[in-house]
Length: 115
Length: 113
Image (cartoon, rainbow over all chains, first blue to last red; front, side, top):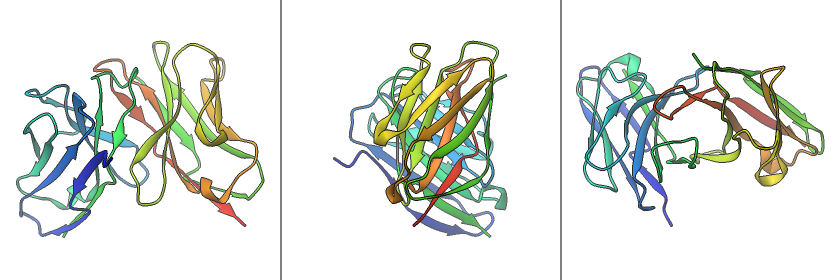
């Protein structure tokens, strides 16, 4: 059982380049999330999708776009990468929208460096 | 607004010693509190959670945490550290809206042989 799969695991971009981080889950979960993790800071929510067909901004959405392609897949796009977007990105999923009542399952993360 | 503070970005203990990872929170409403663990090269996974039932919560792998309202704390403990406990531990508190979580910065637990 793969759980939550993120690709790629590592990526180096030049400032201004674009890229899409892919995320897929095989647990038939309704809700999916994108977080970033920076040194000395907790996880910060970028965007989430409470259910297929819906997306909402989180705490730090600027510079990012998302697509909930279907129930399994939730991608994160950087249109014009900036050094401030250097971070570790985590995708997560949960059965229901509320993380108070359900467990979030995380991918292994994507380590992105923008030079 | 809710917030979480984890004291110590790194904690080092000897194998067999007590593990204590500190988490303090602020919340304007009764909180839900969580500990997640990230083993090397893996995603985060739920260790335990407090949802206003028993104040002492038991989790996986022998870990437990006690909710202390008067101290606004939710410290994580394990009586005897094992080499396999080496990981990064994250404390989180429920946010006021959107049913999301506010995360602490994480504490890396190092186990010395």
